[in-house]
Amino acid sequence: MFSKACQYAIRATLFIAQRSLEGERVRLKTIAKAIDSPEAFTAKILQQLARNKIIHSIKGPSGGFEIADHDLDTIRLIKIVEAMDGDQVFDGCGLGLKQCNAAKPCPVHNKFKIIREELKNMLVTTNIRELATDLSVGSTVLRM
Amino acid sequence: MFSKACQYAIRATLFIAQRSLEGERVRLKTIAKAIDSPEAFTAKILQQLARNKIIHSIKGPSGGFEIADHDLDTIRLIKIVEAMDGDQVFDGCGLGLKQCNAAKPCPVHNKFKIIREELKNMLVTTNIRELATDLSVGSTVLRM
DNA sequence: ACTAAAAAGGATAAAAAGGTCTTAATATCA
DNA sequence: TGATATTAAGACCTTTTTATCCTTTTTAGT
Ligand code: FES
Ligand code: FES
Image 1 (tube, protein in one colour):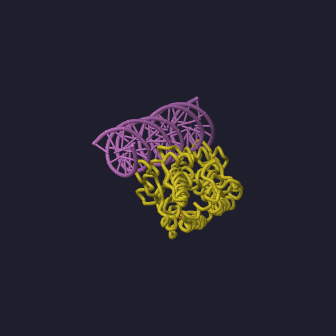
Image 2 (cartoon, protein in one colour):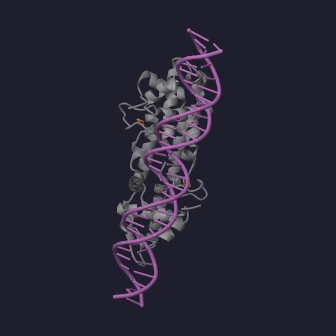
Image 3 (cartoon, rainbow over the protein chains, first blue to last red):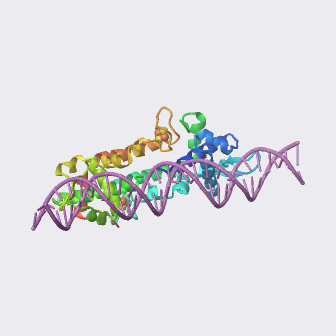
């Protein structure tokens, strides 16, 4: 469904979000451990997230990553997915036709569209604070 | 969502199914042209489909691929997806945790599960004849 | 039996995804 | 100001996916 990079990106963002809720800034090493991801690869992903203004990075000692409180409400999952994987997942044809076209639909178009739209709707309506709060409460986890 | 191989596999299967409806057998070259896929790669995919008993292959002059009429009803989309991509798409964790576990769910588990289940349900309930019939009628297409 | 037409199978190549390493830039603080 | 801790950036490596090519096997038709 999502690329590995995108999965790490969501997990990392949520971890940073959860810590930001508590006013804490986290460094790469901490993030990679918390979400059980390869450190160097995670660094790349965090850079990309920062360039897309999904997270904020601070260099130097006592630096790290954080998310402004205001952003916890405005940033939705879809922003992360679009930044990492583009929009093929929820806009592209399920059978790989060059474009999903209701006028000349592929055989699964009608059935597939429903699922794709539900996915997109979920991504559009889910914000970061909501998911980070579950994490804080301990009802969800970021690694196993 | 699905790998390229899986997308070609579904398209190829449906093309063969449509022709089988009309009692015709089709060869590789015809299939690759019809679904706009690389010929040699498609050959590999057809082999895999044949090994999984999704299609039937006949060697020699006037050989090709076909699907027994009976199979058009019993073979569901899920069989193709499982043969090509395994079950990660509709059983795996959306955030890449080693296993999707309702007892220790990832932050998107509850929202994601709904979509995954709807996808699985769609794949389980959709048979080949249904989709091939749409193709025959001309209401859907396999390439653009 | 011979020939030609098909699929099957194996080796290889190219591209994309996943991941690592090294150096540069930046900020903190003694 | 210099030492150090941190992220940024780019080059590089590895694995998987996608794709091609060549040879072998099977079979129909003559
Ligand atoms: S055309 Fe294939 S999903 Fe719309
Ligand atoms: S644990 Fe992530 S989807 Fe179920």
